[in-house]
Structure formats: C-alpha cells, structure tokens
Length: 73
Image 1 (cartoon, rainbow, N blue to C red):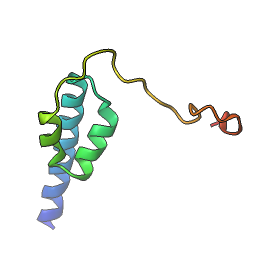
Image 2: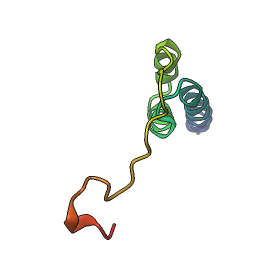
Image 3: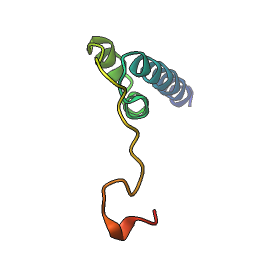
Image 4: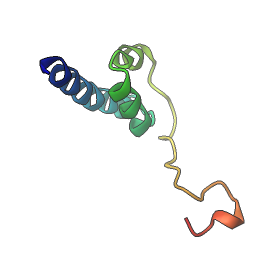
C-alpha cells in the first residue's frame, strides 16, 4: 500500500515540476505535465531540452482542426 502512495506522490510532484520547467522553456506545459505524471523520468528529458525561441506554442482546443462537422465541440 505504501508503494502506491509513494508512486502517486512522485507522479504528482514530477508533473508539477515538468509543467513548470516546460513553461519556463517555452514549451507546451500541459502535455509535458501529463507525460511527466505518467512517466516521472520525463522530467530529465525536459531538463535536457533547450529553450524554445520564439512565441509560445498556441493552445489547441477541440474543434480547431477545421472540420465543419465538429464545430459544435
């Protein structure tokens, strides 16, 4: 039981750290936080990536793919 709690706390902490580092490096913080939650060693990957120059990535929403049939999503 304690292993599950330890993994849960590790996953939450690594998601917060991964999302924060991704935002500081001008990357999509939500996807990095999600991947760091699922696989905590991805925090090392975001540490090794260089900062993304230029504007921050655009946030995509459901229905942004231009499909007229999905415009109500």
